Image (cartoon, rainbow, N blue to C red; front, side, top):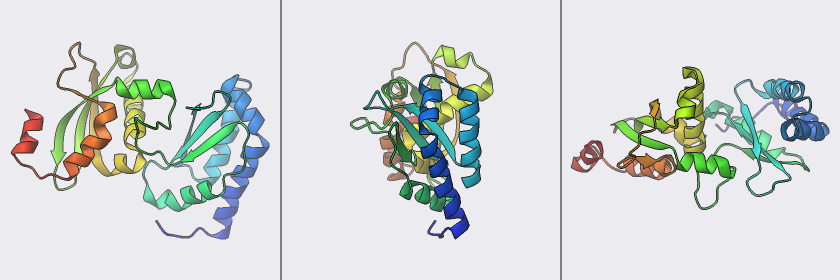
Length: 220
């Protein structure tokens, strides 16, 4: 993770930000007003691919400023990409219409870094712990999603669930602790289920205990 980038890699990242800054107005118009959206986002992804094809971006409303948009960059927890992520963060230019967050961090109910609608979705998605490996500290979960989501094809449902987990746990904790998950329709009675917003704290709790009577109670 402490690997230094070579001059060419660093220059590629600087070139990406130079392109982003030069095209900031067009990117904003594409995302906010849907002006030439497909073309602009194609070029944004193409330029990001020069940095790494495994680094993904998400553009959302800004959680505090309605006149701005927010861009998240994630390496999905792959530590080999962290030097590039760090360089992306260190070279963020001054921008007028965007704020940038490199790395997706765990969900914080007190100071959310994501838009209100994403906060509400996470709070209103429920989960059940299916298995926990005390050696690897990895878990298997069931996510209970609303019916509209479950009507999508399976790949879109899984993508939706993955992004909810990613923005709930943050990319490092997701990579470290999620072994697998499955999705089911939200039941009418959610008693006994956890809100997805509670998952970061719950995983911290699980990581501190061994398989004991206390852990068995969770599955009963």
